[in-house]
Length: 226
Ligand SMILES: Cc1cc2nc3c(=O)[nH]c(=O)nc-3n(C[C@H](O)[C@H](O)[C@H](O)COP(=O)(O)O)c2cc1C
Image (cartoon, rainbow, N blue to C red; front, side):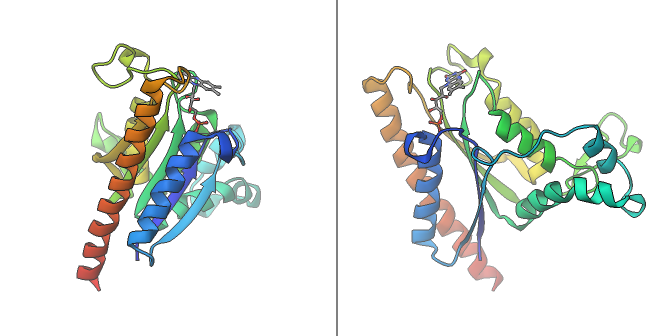
């Protein structure tokens, strides 16, 4: 059985959010093709996780066997978020562009999920690359929306795009290889003209196709395992 983890990070209400519309579309289509798939929803846009602080950092860097009760309590939400990632085969992220980067809500989620001993190990014996991911084999679908346009690698606003590089830099914490990140983005939302309409239509078709393809592929893999 395939498990999807749907993570929404738009601050907007569902009726006004393009990324929530895309994540909903993806999950509905995936479940239409594979009705046995399971979906966990983590809505950090509407229920943000608290920012990490010095207590969180002290708790996270104290070895598990030496942790005091307050440390375990401070890490409880982080543990739950990480357990959701571990249980998932595919992460489906709704990611609006805010001020050319990630919404704070999604960055907060990443700060809770990137945890020494749970999602990465750190060893200076590895020389200049001391960090190694612990999780592997997951896929990441990024469903984004932007008010402006031209954020793709050769686009006119490529140097301003800090959203896609941030996700790609942190993907290893979620057990996702670079080649397993699939991104679909609506553009021109602020222009509200025919280019936006066209972009919405393209994103809708691409999202439905990706959901179908991944659902079919995962069903085949599951059938081979069972
Ligand atoms: C607080 C805020 C900041 C934004 N910053 C940018 C930006 O830097 N660049 C951009 O292209 N669009 C920006 N936008 C437009 C959003 O990316 C766009 O409205 C998108 O559709 C939001 O996703 P949502 O519809 O799921 O809420 C911003 C919107 C908001 C509300």
